[in-house]
Image 1 (tube, rainbow, N blue to C red):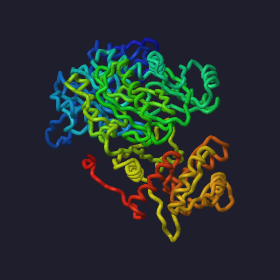
Image 2 (cartoon, rainbow, N blue to C red; image 1 turned 60 degrees about the vertical axis):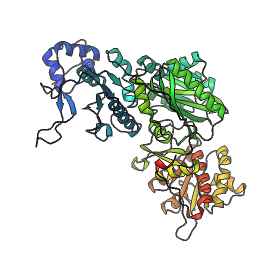
Image 3 (cartoon, rainbow, N blue to C red; image 1 turned 45 degrees about the horizontal axis):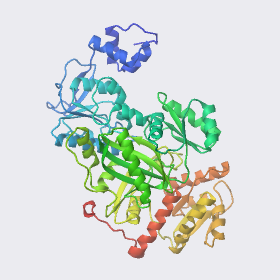
Image 4 (cartoon, one colour; image 1 turned 90 degrees about the horizontal axis):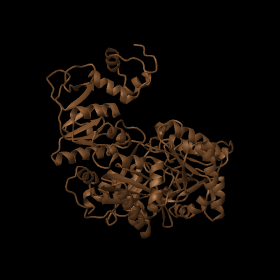
Length: 610
């Protein structure tokens, strides 16, 4: 079939039916014929062109199958299952990919389980066979379908459930809120108008200004000249932030006019329908998050977590600690107060997440997501409060009370560490930034921060350097700027005290030697002189590498990249963040003091931490 693009092309019933059977979406047909998606949908309804509901045959036709696995097709006439006319419809997270993973599926599963406990009929819509939410016994009815506006509306209009929960599956369902509401769907929980206000960077920033809540200086972009003028006013670096995106997609830190121009183009392409905001990037600040559940603007439970890394690392890649161990009481008080005011202003019912910057008790808001976040499962496991169960009860207007416990008063500590797959991404630079790169995570519980932190990092693949082949364990250091070298000096001395042999790039070696730390200098990989860092890595004569990236001369940047990439390719534990490296070394020191040189860790079941 040949379809040509025309303005208001005639679209008879037989042609539209054939196009739908060939897989053309309403949006694509509208684009080809000079109409909008809504107009094509209305035309389909007028022609009574609707998809049939079919049941997936789980027994390969060997025996008659009766399952709740359903899908929709235009290549059928009769329905295999009658409409339910009731229940709660939950939208899943879709395909797993970098930036969206199993954390959202945990939220979806707990949502349908809670609905069933409350006696509600449950309908799940998802399209990933690897998820638990698509297991046969998780819900009363499963639609194995794409999470598009067209298909979700098809299912909703046919099933006629009581409403839709779209705050559990991450950004994909959340992006459908305003369009579903405009089409007449009932959305459980926070109103779509509030979701739009939080997701739209410009609207949310304006709300914070109205509430008198501090945020980094910002401006809605109208063009490159205005962006350059703003950057000149507040000073580089600046953060480019598209609206309605997941995992920091197209979010970048610009350090000069050249990178600003490049990143602006990318952000506009990713978020073409929504505004892009430029804001001041605050260096050397602490990032803090609050995951919470509210009902009609009143917070029922909250968990405040801190990132080990400074701000600038995406929350999905950051090492997260609960309860926060190194925050001022005044900072915590301000975060609670600000969160309560935002929850009330947006009349939040259900889950939400707010990210903050903190410097010396000065607290500023980065963004607010009116949905579950990646850390909801982690916070629920560590605090022993199922935050999704609370949220679903609130959204369904069931009786629910404030949690009796506080996540700040736990007698144990949880640490969430990111799992990366750089070894399978050929040529990728293994550095964390404002756009998410991790493919999974590990959560560990311990008696204190060093215990939980060490368990978490060992679980994602780090190894404690050990002596072998008759030599002491060797660590390569290339510790970034002079400020970072000073910051790491005490940790370098601790490594020497633990009998580690230190090697370093020339600049770092010169600084350490001048500070009385024994170290051997090595030449850069791109230099032909011996001893050379690249040769040491190839011969596997290094047991750990700490390489801190910095904005510097092009030659040094290339050498730093080669060190990091070779560390990944030769499976040598690599740290690229100075805060994480320091915490790891501190944890090693404390663990040795506790357990001696044998290096054993306390292992207890999750249930034993009470």
